[in-house]
Length: 86
Image 1 (spheres, rainbow, N blue to C red):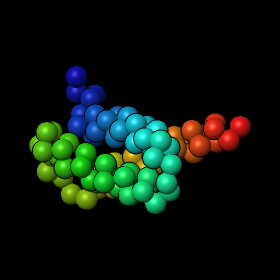
Image 2 (image 1 turned 60 degrees about the vertical axis):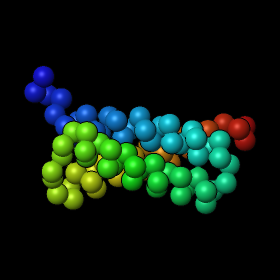
Image 3 (image 1 turned 120 degrees about the vertical axis):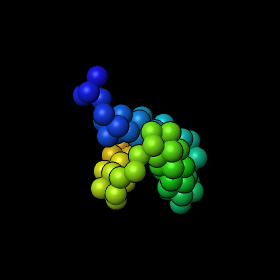
């Protein structure tokens, strides 16, 4: 399918990884450690996907995936955090 190019695939993968990292950050329960954990997870998956999909693009690809990942991570982490407070 031509529609599922590498940019769409990596966007979906980073969204799912952001959801998982958001939940694991909630489980960690320390803000600074959870933020460091999220950054490390992003860097690891960035290099893994870049090698696995053989992506040789410029910084534009990196910025798009960072925005998707970190926004998803923050939203999921906040939802779980507020769910416990209620």
